[in-house]
Length: 395
Image (cartoon, rainbow, N blue to C red; front, side, top):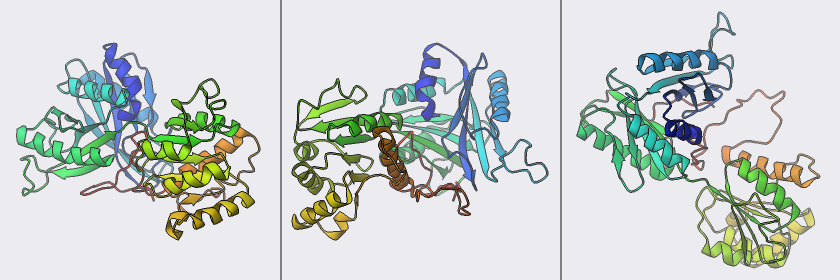
């Protein structure tokens, strides 16, 4: 649901009633993972997707019905051996979808609306919902913020709400979307009676592009398209201007290594070094390759890379640190233009994040969808691994 926060926040602000169908469990080669959502408002307008097309029509009708009767429903969609084009997933996977109406009289409308508003503002927030259990609790919600503040009880008593909030807070801290089993009493000692699904939404991850060059302008646009908050940094004020990079969230004039030492990065941050100039690259990469970031890539020819590698070794970087460097940056797409090069770089970032090979899918017999990587912790980039998780994943 939170991946549709911007649109649904607008719907809520306009006073619309709507129903949201969320993928809460997947199996096999499911086209979309847990957290994917489709929403339908009272006028029949729809946003989002739960399957990329396979079962959208049936899920749409479930949303319409839930909006009419005000009753949450959970439904499983899988492959039909008798008729592969019946309502089901022709890819062979299985998805469980929870449909929740968000009407004016819905008990958890304020909780859901506040979660959507926070996510739309780019704030960190977790939304927990009961996805398996007694009918009276199905779809009930609870909101958790990073400071531990919470709204709602997920339909249970105070102890249950406190227990759900504790688990949801841990998942939010890790930036993870996952399900866990819980006892209605709230006690960890009692047998699990319910399943709670938690969606975590975090501020956009950072992409820092070093080098105010033409390739950077194209990469800024591509990074923004992928959902990154993009910064351009260059020591040359004549090149590092907002006018040259209107798509960047910020443009910084500073020596790259000095800026990187002082700015915030985390395990989701992507660093792209496009200067291919040793006086900038080497000091910068000495810092970058020792930071716990998601990706470090550097542009340059094979000769530039070999020279850079020698300089970095001489500076004291270890083999393990050097192995983190993607250089020359990008996948081999035969790129020529800045836009094609940006696509090549973005493709390598996505492949590194999800464990992809970059090889064509045509003729391959291995699964298309990769198991989520522990490094992948973005909200538009949710995953479903974790302690007590009941999901089965696309492999």
